[in-house]
Image (cartoon, rainbow, N blue to C red; front, side):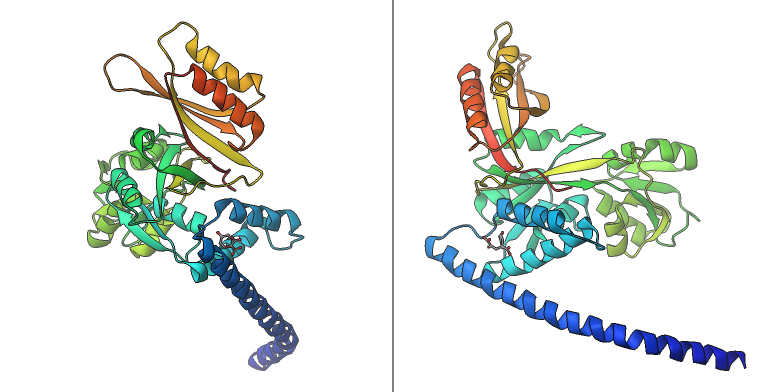
Length: 369
Ligand SMILES: O=C(O)C(=O)C[C@]1(C(=O)O)C=C[C@@H](O)C=C1
């Protein structure tokens, strides 16, 4: 009797589902058709660009498309989900024009890899490099079209090696991408049974310090070369737990003991996309520069005065020792606006006149996230 009633209920449900699924099938057919029409137009764009050898990847255009999607989105689908879908659509269309190769700080499964996909979508060829230096080298040599390198973390501060290398590279910053850093405690079994060491990159251990002190104060913490390496170790050795992103957990088939264990819930890392491409204005842009002040009283004040006088807002100011033993510093400054914006151009020209060293690192669209 009960079984019968259940079967009746299922039939009734299927009767209701059938027309709805037919609607979905019809919409999918339209989406399929529209996507291929879009792809054909992108192919035409590719041919036009090929005539003049113009760059295929246009971060300013992609940023405008994605911002437009969020602006026009009536819902119920959320803006972030809609942007993820459109990023993939553009990635697939772009790969019909030309597939780009992107170098990043490996191994696979790191936040750097996540940043690559967040910026370029998944229709790209990725090249995992062993160090930040190697990402620069591969991009400078043209082995990769672009490189993605970490610039700063919201809790741990600047990534010094990236700042040092930006100073001398012929490459520019063509784009930026910010990602939320969410650390999970991962093991082969999904439990802490038999675990004698918690492994992660030193920065991740630092970012989860309070949580670890509160929950596993007695377990040894061991710094390793990357979180992805820790995840690989946890897969091969069940006495090891790893702190890494969920992406690494999936890659190495690990179970989650606890997700989101970072002490700062707003922990974010900003990455720079480096390449030879000078990105055009997108409407909401940032310009990064490196400079040194002459050894004179008030020189930093004068330098920054050029920004204020031209109404240009500074969003970041970072100093780094020049490493010549003279207590001299390089300053890394980010301002709102593109270098083609007249106020920004004027401010930078004045600034350059007052600086002992000056280099524009790049103008690029502000990260969507
Ligand atoms: O508008 C272009 O230049 C295109 O190549 C098209 C397109 C897109 O699919 O919308 C693809 C790649 C570019 O990075 C930007 C946008």
